[in-house]
Image (cartoon, rainbow, N blue to C red):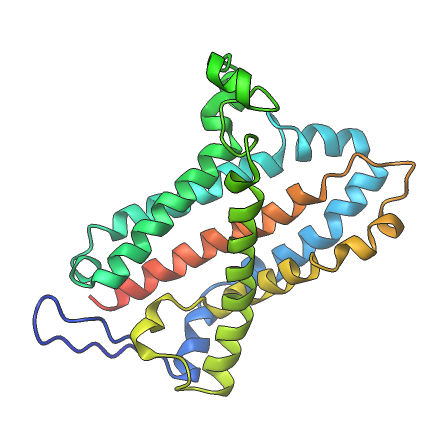
Length: 250
């Protein structure tokens, strides 16, 4: 499934996927998780928001009790924990590029998860330090409400990576094998992230349909929270598959 060439302990990982082996790694991952669940969320969330707004506000969108906020915080933190374990893997530590890629994943996912929960404030309800009260527009213990450089801009970069990596890389691996550099094969997103990448791409066109989907009579739906849910799933699935790939090299 994977071909590894080692001349010494510092040799790079050559993780070459054929189209068939690339498909096979996702076959072992139930379609319930990577196809059915994203589709159910895509359809069910706006329906619940439209016809059961009280349930939606309390159990989906609330910062303390809502499923969205829980997923946004916990899924990236699980991905960070998976990455942290990989940093101690000898194969990862022997490959400088892969080590720093995983390190960036750990730091980025920790930041995303921590920021979404305001580093625990949403759940433990402590008072923000005075410095955050002064500079944070929601008086919360986080950075993403201070400047777009800590929120919208990093999110746009991550979204772009998910769309390009989740759609273009699988297409090239399956239709144009050999085009992508084999040196980086181990980090290319798996097929299981394709439905999520498609949904994230569709959100770029969502603004044109927003008024039709959500009439002005009900305007409490924060579509950004909906989008971040799919992005959180993408991060978690990516981390799971990256760990599987590294373990397959042992």
